[in-house]
Amino acid sequence: MNWLLLLPELILAATLGAVLLADLILPPARRSWLAGLTLAGTAAALVALIASAPGTFGGVFTNDGLARFIKVIVLAALGLVVLSAWSFDLVWRRPWGEFLVLLLAGALGMLFLASGQELVLLYVALELATFPLVLLTAYRPADVKSAEGGLKFLILATLGSAVFLFGVSLVYAATGATRLVDISAALAAGQTGPVLLMGLLSILAGMGFKLALVPFHMWVPDAYEGAPTPVTAFLSVASKSAGLVLAIRLLANAFPDLRVEWSGVLAALAALTMCLGNFAAIPQTNIKRLLAYSSIAQAGYLIMGLVAFQVMGLSALLFYLAAYLVTNLAAFGVVIAVERVTGSTDIEAYRGLAQRAPRMGLVLMLALLSLAGIPPLAGFTAKFYLFAAVYGQGYIWLVIVAVLNSALSLYYYLRVIRVVYIEPPATAASAPALPVPIPLALVLTLCLIGILVLGVYPGPWVDLARAAVVSLF
Amino acid sequence: MLSLTHYLVLSAVLFGLGVFGVVTRRNAIALLLSIELIMLAVALNFTAASHFLGNADGQIFAIFVITIAAAEAAVGLALVISVYRNQQDVDLDRLTVLKG
Image 1 (cartoon, rainbow over the protein chains, first blue to last red):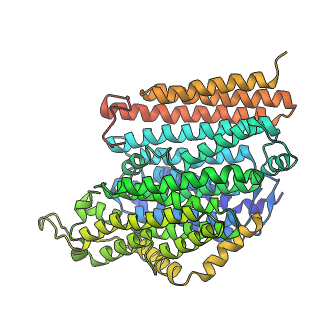
Image 2 (spheres, helix red, strand yellow; image 1 turned 90 degrees about the vertical axis):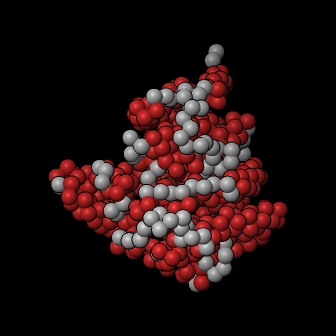
Image 3 (cartoon, each protein chain N blue to C red; image 1 turned 180 degrees about the horizontal axis):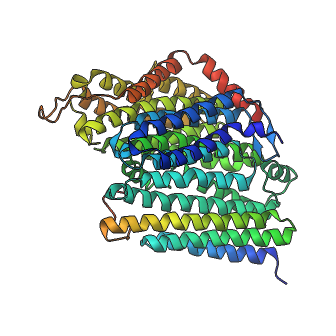
């Protein structure tokens, strides 16, 4: 039992406790101290994580390459989201300590999810990663949208976990095992049957809910629109990473012998999800809803990495997640900057943005082009690796669907860019100046550097992603 | 003599009823109740399997499931109350500020 393996989680848990206590003691004017405390804890956890050695804790918790890669993404997302929420009045003037505590709790659940090797731990971690985000979605209870989005999100998320859990219970009934290695050993010993397959199907459906795949995507745009924008950013990046790592764990460690059964289902889900996400994004007039549908489409691309379940496919998936992190946080950073001043998330509010805030316009343009997959940005490189990996596995029809979808997505991203760069503001009064607080500017700068570096110089990052998944096979 | 299969069938029926409730009911509280029914089906599965396999892991899992279901109900009802305060309604077909 090597407790040092749990060090990043322990640091984050201690930070959570410290923020909770400090929130009681400090006067409300000291909000920035709480944020500083959270950031310091996140940074310490990140350092502990990078310095940590691989190993296994009691056979239920592993600190392998995959876990560390995902944890770096989750912690980076946590830090960037706290920075971008800094002095964002919709959360800053509310009980800010609670906001940070809930964010930390959700991130803690995601860290455990990335390392879990046993179904009880994975289930508890999954719920710990879900409930705080539900509460954060409904963070402004007097706001009609926020409360409604939170309730819809809760029903969808708990239904997803219930279906997932039903599958887990059937797998347990069939194999008598809750450790992933034991399940895989039981399968390798030739155990199969209708109960086990029903269980696998239920688990896949439950994961479909978690990753917002078609046909389980219904209320995701509502949750994204209702949530305070920094929460939406965290949901779109960190939750997605956590859901994907759970899927990789289960498929790679527990069900590798049923690959024929699940890869076909996932390929169909991927194609449907990207088509629906992109088509539904076209008529949207609210930028958060547009980004919500775009993130559904991106989940479709990401699932392709699971279809090509080899070192190349999975490392492309991890690289895509890293690119998605910087790209999406850059886009949401601009949304926050505009919402701070105008109070609006309608695309109309972006008219003439390029004239009154040229740098904001540029960041938004680069982020949207990267989401669409235009070279030389991160999104292009990521899509290139991913599509190449899927092509290499023989799913040529899926690659064709994905490429057509990328072209389609360019249409609605360009529509936003057109509003930003070409359409003049309706009146001078509707185009106030756009001051950006320093923490948010820092986030945007870091994300922009990330978009360019991952796009132009991907080599070392791809090697990192490859090293992270190589031990799974 | 009852076998594990009997229990699995019973819990599949409970699961089916829960899913049926989720699909047909539009009232948020009825939806939460239906989801609870699914969670009970899960707990039954775990307990029965644990008994027939002679392996205690399932019972521990069932305790975790029930505990988390309680947390879920607490969060869910809190959100139902806050939605009701805003809109005086908890019927999801009529909660359309966000166009779902």
